[in-house]
Length: 442
Image (cartoon, rainbow, N blue to C red; front, side, top):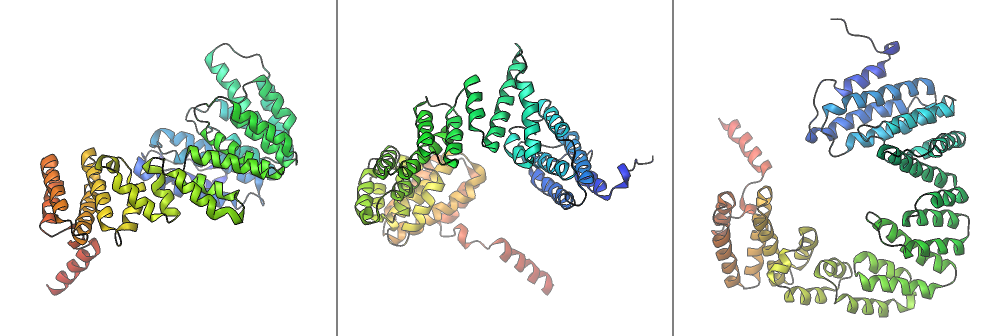
């Protein structure tokens, strides 16, 4: 059976088809490599945008449509293909601009894909798309979206959803255009959110109107907290301090940062606090902050005290913590502390390593059993270094009692107890070299 040649027998079209692997299913584990191969082809198209925008636009169109054809043949639960398709749309817009194509037609076509986006590839694409248009194209995009937004709202749910989406797109357009008046007018017709307040404040600050920007920041902070708005709340609080400083109210900015730190002591809030502390007062404010952090939860202070080298405070707090508290903490939090304390405070490090191992076994996370054995080996070494043999024996007894049915991990654990831990086993490369040497002697 003859194969249809791509349009114009374009070599890049053939590359697109080859990279998309029509008919072959792409598993989740293979999706990252698959998309990487698509990106290589896209980079070749990008190279010809300035020289031949018309050809590049046509190639992008083929590529975008091909990705939608491929959507049923890939497990894209990680979103790799979706993000890639967004980048193709932006490349297509830039190519259309380079080709001098009709801007209204570009806008209409993009909106058509956004409105009938069955795979969610255009979800929140407006944030990047508005940056791809030139000034004339962005104005055309605004006209097309505005016309649809101003249509009488449909009573059905899909119609209401489309109007909300078009409102989101208009927000992105006005933010890119720096049009404060239009952005505010739109919010008055829809629903003002903390994110909107931050966007308006950002535009006003760019216009060197810090007092007006501050008013919008405070308006956003005063709004009732909503789901998925935590980032906006953080951004608003940070901007408020910067605006207060700009307006000569550095004392108020410091007070705001101090209040935030006391509410949630962490590495981030500490660094933010110290940004507003006068250089001559940093030592005093540091001591004040560390004292306040004593009341925070263990998860927060471990990273903070490691970062600020408050090791004695950290040791004292860890020694007060019971085993259940330590086991409740993630390894991202406790592992750095264990490594830092192994040499000078092995008794504390031993308890942390013990907790890391127990956390895995109690959660029955079999794929992490090897990591748990390594944790127990580190715990054993630290207990021995600290002269706490009896404590290690208690750990052994507990593991045997609570986890004797986990045959796979118990086999390794008993080898560890007998003195042959994971670190004593030859590594993969050692085994490979040994295999080579054995074959060479045969």
